[in-house]
Length: 308
Image (cartoon, rainbow, N blue to C red; front, side, top):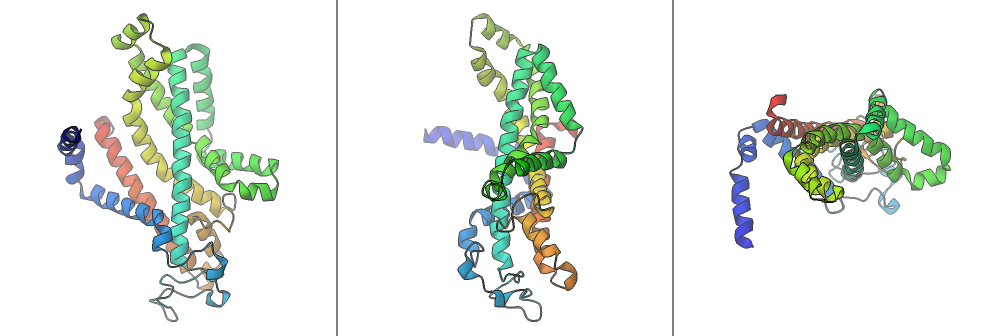
């Protein structure tokens, strides 16, 4: 077993993917930055000086302190504090973790729904294929942010404010996830249509193999590479969508310090001189989205060279 793992690792290191990665400095920088931010978000409870969820760690007398390099700043709060006295560095780390959690869950939901519908449309065909693709075409006529706002609006109209506050994270995950399934469905359907007509699939059907097994064992593995690339690119869009919804006041409540929520809170103090409350979370968001996009675009070019 150890020898098999060693052989697979050697094969991976000798692959074109690793070769292209090592000869592209911008991708190395983007990958390093993305991994660093993700690790920082994952280890937020260990790295953050304070817990922004803990009221006992918040002192209103420490409100609106500037970063340590500015006059009046302190190393106790390296990136300053917000109007409630919360440490901005701690809020960014915890907010980054929450934003990434929501984005990853939303991307997973989009990938599962889109892949299932794409496979169903390709395998069944006929009116089922037509109905799914026309639904996809209709959704493509609306920007993703409007679809997410519609789902969130329906949830707000259905639930009481207290119920919505409790279910805020699942609601925004569903809102972003539902808005992004179309790309997966169209991509998987096109790949499945090609694989469906190949001899090995026809042979499996002739010998009576269960259609579910044919789709899961033979057709789906051929689409996993494209699904992974789509998920990487979609992750950046999901992060931006969550930040936009929270900035507009339609996402997470102020008690949940996601990156978008922090930017919205800080925007109220931007023109009064407390720029760090919104600018620093904004820079963090821009760096995360940029790094993920760089890696996603590179993966797309390597896996599909025709798109270069």
